[in-house]
Image (cartoon, rainbow, N blue to C red):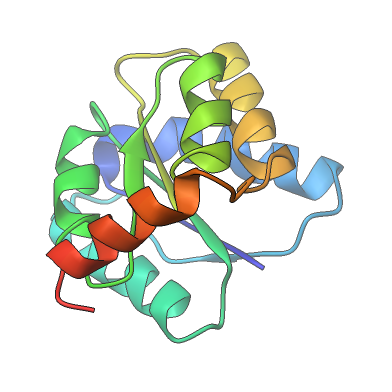
Length: 144
């Protein structure tokens, strides 16, 4: 299951991503917002709780730039969030970093590119191998 959330700066892009998820028959849960002005840390915290609890495997957070959501999400133990504005980064943040949250900027990228980024993020898996030691070092930094 995928969790998705946005603040008011990412609302239009969230609608496009939800349409993509529906079209591809991918289950998701909406962590907000509905277009109203909200504080992005509240949405990020709600979405990250769904991932750390095991209810969802991955998340997509959207704000104006993706940066604020990423900064908030990365404060949560067990979350590896990455801002991606291109498909290469989306692919490699999954296969090398095992990112579990994709962050994007609704005021930075258009819907067409965003959907390609989502596709790469969702269709790639962590490849393990030499990347495991690096992931373990990241986890150690957060106190695991």
